[in-house]
Image (cartoon, rainbow, N blue to C red):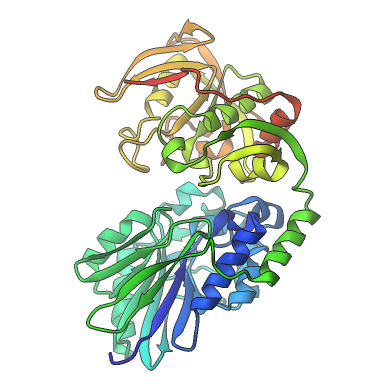
Length: 454
């Protein structure tokens, strides 16, 4: 191409807003990478979830967007967390153009007057085309998005790529919140770069001549893409030691203080790991803590916390625990509920904790954190070898009460055995139940053998 147009790619900022220094250094890193030869773009879940996202309905993201003035953004599944009206308001108030080619409501593009399906932009003398797409699973994964239709992203990108090249684009870039579907997209569509999100693992690689990138989550990394040369290249920019944007850090600190989220409510004598490998690996202290809180709050026989509902972080919970810490573990406005299941249904629920039994995530993941259960599971045979509640074998015809998130009745991705017909009562919001448990009890979560994987 003869010049060096660059793209600065961020995604899944999520919980970075909950730590003023982290979001400040993230903003400073992006600003330092930006320049007259570059465009800054986001690929979804940059308004939430997180503690401040929950408290402010995503408005905290405007502090970042105003400082960075990105060129383009696409929608992630969590950008609908606070309702469609709030999503539209954030789009209207933010400086970037929002691209969404496969999200519809009532037969037309979502927020049609505020969004575009694709756009061309001159970057350092080169015309580059951009199109945004969102995971088709969003309607089943987010209760706030059930009235939306998510059309085939492959068809949307193919149509956009043709239109963009016809309009003069020398390169086509996809802003993708599709997760692992990016690989199929690269094989199916004639595009040059796919800037990914949704999945929180970092990546820079090539597939069938297409560059694929993903910066990971929580504002720890951004990706710098160079469109010069025979093919695009990319590199990571770590944010931990990046320059601090004092304006963004101060704005977030003001929001945290105003919300009373710094109140100390408990203490962790030993650091509680919350990494993805731990929360999806089987029984863990964090999962046991949350599930125990749910059973304590409801008096149910059994409690279940899905692994996908525990927000991962490389920083453990340690020492003084605040309200913000507890909200950050399950940062959703989802009520805790009580369901009734037969013993046979409870067995099916336990089987669906295995990654080989559901379509979500990796085959070796474990999706269920329990309280009140002793489960022995054989990974090789995918068979329950022992299942007990309150020290007694589960009987198929007996009825058991289960405390869990209201979300799980509506998603088909996790624990599809659960439906609205099982729900018998609704309790407090999840994070409030967790905060009350930590406030009222001397917590000492341990791995105690409630789940054994052979």
